[in-house]
Length: 302
Length: 299
Image 1 (cartoon, helix red, strand yellow):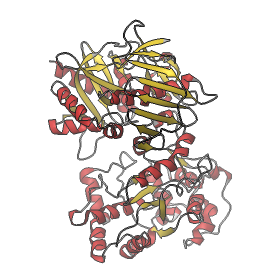
Image 2 (image 1 turned 60 degrees about the vertical axis):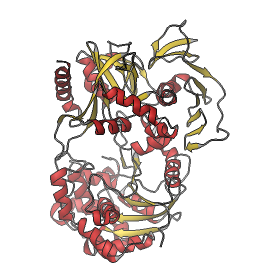
Image 3 (image 1 turned 90 degrees about the horizontal axis):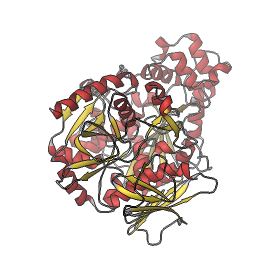
Image 4 (image 1 turned 90 degrees about the vertical axis):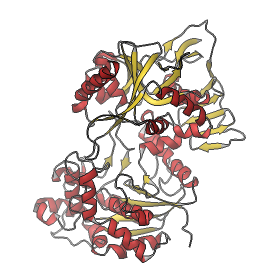
C-alpha cells in the first residue's frame, strides 16, 4: 500500500502514483484508491456523457482502451485497467480527471490551473488546456520559483479563512517541444503515457506544503482591443471568472455544489485578486512573460 | 414553422468561406441586435474540432489521449451535444468526411441531419492558405495536393484544436459530396460572392431554418466584408491564424490569376482537374499528372 498527500488529502493507494507526494502511512485516511471491478454502466444513472455516468454519489469514468474509474462520495476511487494496459498509463487519469471529480464531490474550490510559490506566497495560473500553463510554470521554476501544482489547483481555506494552494504532486507534465525549448531534458523523468510525447519533469524545487494564495492570473492572448499586459479584474467579473476557470465546470454544476463553491470563491477573493495576463503565445515570448509576471507579483507583495 | 433540431455541418476545406457563412448565421440569430461580434459568434455551435468542447463533454484531458482514441469518441461527443437540445445547431467542420479508426462514420451517426458543403476554387484556396498560414504558395499547394493532409497533427506539443484529417483538396470535396449518409447542399464560394442573398436563402431552405427575406437581408448587410474588416481592425479576430496578416483580407474570387505562376497553376490543375471541372471551375492549362513531390508533403 502506498501513502500520498494529494491536494491536502491523505491518500492510501494500491496503485503506485509515481508523481504524487509521499504521505504519512499512519495519518487518518481521507481517500482510498484501490484496484477493483468497475462496471461498464451504472444502474439508475441520472446524468451521463460519452465517457461517464453519474448515479447519486457515484461517478463512473470510462477512458477507452485504458481503464474505468469509479469515484464515490469524495473518498474512494476504484480502478480497473483494461487487459494489456499498465497501471502507470492509468495513473495520469487517477491524478487528473478522477481526482478532480473527487475534489468536486467534496465541495472543494478546484481551479483548472497550475501554481508556483516564491517566498511564503503563491500564485495560480489558469487557462484552458493548451493555453501554456505548464510551460509558463516550468519557466518560472527555472527562474527560481517553487513548484506547487501543474493541472489541478485545489484552493483550501485555513482556520483564518485564508486561501491556501494545495500541492497536487511533485512533477509537472510537459510536451517534448516545451522540454526542448526550455532545455529541461536532464530533468525529464518518464513519459506520462507510453504512447505520448509528454513527460513528467522534476522541477527541482517542490513546495509540498499548502501556501497562501496571493493572486490568480488567467492567461489570454492579445487583440487590438486587448493589449498585452496584466490587468486587474473587477470583483463581480472575478467571481464569474473563477467559476469559468474551475476544473470541469460542467460536472460541478451537475452535482449541484455550485453554491458551496461560490461561497468558497468569495472567501478566496477576499485575499487573492484575479488578473488577466494578456501575452502573445509562442516560446519566443516566454521569457518576457516571466519577467512581466515576476515584476507584477513582486509589486503585490510590497 | 419550427426549425428541425439536430446538427447541420458547415463543411469545407480551409479557406473556403465557412467563416463568412458562420458570421452570416450569427447575424441572422442576432437579428435587430446585430451586427454580431466576430469574436463572439453565436451560430449555436462552434467548430467540430474544438478541444475545449471535447473536454467539456467527455470530462477527459484530450492531451492524455491519442488522436485515434479522440477520433473514436468524436461521434459520441456530437451525439451528446445534439441530444442536449431540441434546437438546430450549426457546426463548422474542416475534417474530410471520414470513418473513425473503429470504422464508424465520424459525422453521420451522431444526431447530424445534414451538411452544407462550401467549396472554393483550389487556386484561390492556395493563395489564401499561403497568406493566412504565413507560408509560401508552393508550400500551400503541396498541402492541397497531399493525400494525407491534416490540421493540428503535431504530437510533440498540443495544438489548439483536435487533429483533423483532410486528405487532398479533391479527396476532401469527394469525401463529402459522394457520401450517401447525410443530405448535402453544395455551395460554391464564387456563387456566394456573386449572389449572397440567393445562396444563403437556398442553404437555409435546405436546412429548413425559417427566415424572412428582410431578416436575411439584414444579416447579409451586417456580414458585409468591409464591415468585418472594420471589426477586425478595431477588435482583432480570435480565429486568425497569422500573427500579422488580417483574416478578412480580400475575400474575392479569381485573385489567383495575378498570384500564381503557370507552373503553380499546372500543379494544382494537374492534381485536381477532374473535380474542378465537376464543380464548374474552368481550367486554364492542359491538365497533366501531379508530380510525386506534390503528394508527399503536408504543411
